[in-house]
Image (cartoon, rainbow, N blue to C red; front, side, top):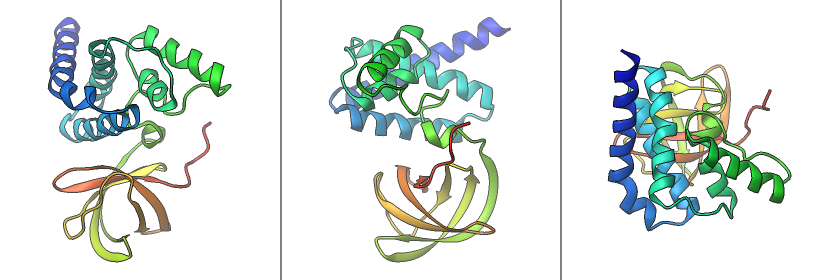
Amino acid sequence: MFKGIRMRTNELAEELADFWLSAIAGAGWEDRLTILREVDAQLAADIEKRSEYEAVCPRFVAAVIEQLGMPQVDCEPQAKIYALSAFPRHREAAKAWSERVLGASPSGSSAAIGGDRRRSPRQAVDVISEIWVHEQRASCQVVDLSKGGARLLLRELKASPGTAVRLVLPDVGVRDATVVFRNNVGIGVQFVDQPSAV
């Protein structure tokens, strides 16, 4: 039984890597990290079982790195990507670069591509709220929330990855955030003030 699950996980990861390779190969490491975060967010929404989602994402990252030829780590976004791989040799390369250059392990080395967004457990919610994008206010629906970020249904305004936004959260107040992914129904945001790692 577990062998079949592992095989499906590996096949899905390889198929995803094949599909996204042309977009990823032509991008720089910062853009590659953004693309991988967008894919991660979509997988989180599409895969019902959290354990399956957490199995697919690191294998997908590993397959992408392998298809790129596993270039030597030479920048922080690349180290963050390598740190998310299922393959120990990729994680070790990220750690070696980070210790050599930064004196620390790369941030974002959680099991999922979303990095800081995944350090805290996500909680499904269904809350109507308000968001400001480029000084424009709009209604939005918060569909999941963690200490590190949130996923929102947002139809009135367009907000691309990297856009600074301000979000009103019930029982929390106003939070400044940055858009980390966008799809045709909404956005994912990462809060500017992240919780301290434990």
